Length: 285
Picture: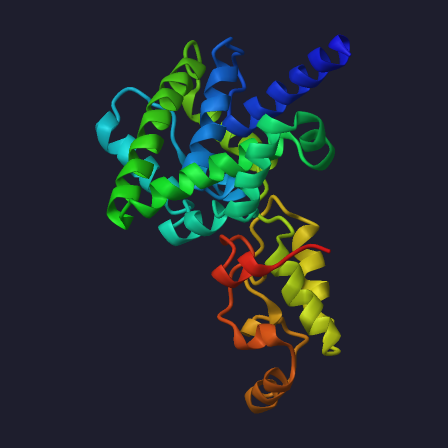
């Protein structure tokens, strides 16, 4: 088991270094920086897929930059703030799935009858519920402006450390421009632009149930190249970007959408976007 954990940790760090663009050096502090990134994503409610993809847009520090370090860090933080959850989204995500009365009963049982408690629940589950309850309490006392400031502070702190690490990547590099381009290429090849999110699958399912399989085919085509930008395939087919093979007139198309799936009535969301609010209600069965 110890040998497996060592191998797993080695592969994990290797993959994470590619995702963060650490290609020239391996430093002991990398693991802590990775852990802090994941914790910052969790604390800010960031979309993991899009946040990782955005990292390639954060430049390495180089001599003679036109803008100061503080301004560059601020711009990078604003880029990642676009992927953070709103106050309402965080409240919904941190709402305990267990009723407070049930939670209180289980906490009492854990003290009075540990054997029975272990038969019907476990401490890890209870700890998660208590953590959510505590976070929700804090969020209820937080305004949108205060949350945004806190999210910006969290990302600014991490990005400052990240750029210092990136600066060490360029030490001893004779061709800085080539190193920057290689970093971007590797990162975009390790961080997918599109993944099969629940709302994307739901749109395709609803269209197929209405007899229209064009969205299934379109999603499949997008997912065949998840790391690449694909012009003309940014939006669902029902949003009006179905391709040259869709020869229906505007009037016919409008009539078809009215009679088709519920997804046609929703505002179109790009495949590489954060999930829309309605997707929070989706459950995988």
